[in-house]
Image 1 (cartoon, one colour):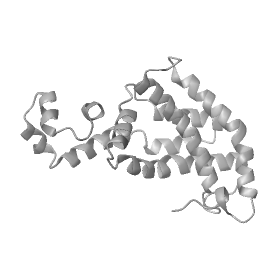
Image 2 (cartoon, helix red, strand yellow):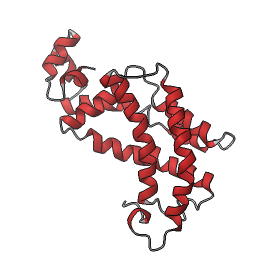
Image 3 (tube, helix red, strand yellow):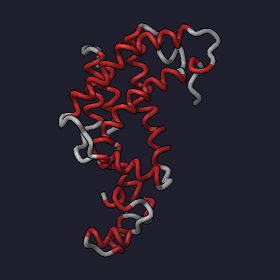
Image 4 (cartoon, helix red, strand yellow):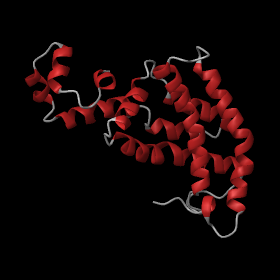
Length: 201
């Protein structure tokens, strides 16, 4: 919470004062400010991007809508929005967290989501046809709507409904209504250019 409020330029001395401890105590456990921040990020974001995300999407006994709703219920489970505030603060302060998070999201969230969407649409799996730029952007579109809902709630304080789960379900259901046709068009496109080109590694 301290760095989300004060920014990443805030000193460990100020953090120690906030906690009511000596600065030396922080350095007893963390050799540097960067190590402390890395530990904070790991604590805040590791649960969001856990293996459970992939497991939720692979549960073929449930309809895809229910699986994606369960995925994002897990993703936004934190109540105080500390993750989204830390992420935005890091971007504003040019701290490398957003790039690192984007890479983790790519492998632990976006690609498993695309794999589930392909299976639901009767398209070839990722080990046969690499992820396409267009389908990655479609997955990001859904993810972005969920994240912006969290920004509205925890940063702007402008949530229109108290229970975000019903709103997120609306986003996902609307997304699924249109995404299947768009995925097929991307995969049917000839030449593999533009949005139908493979996602760069």
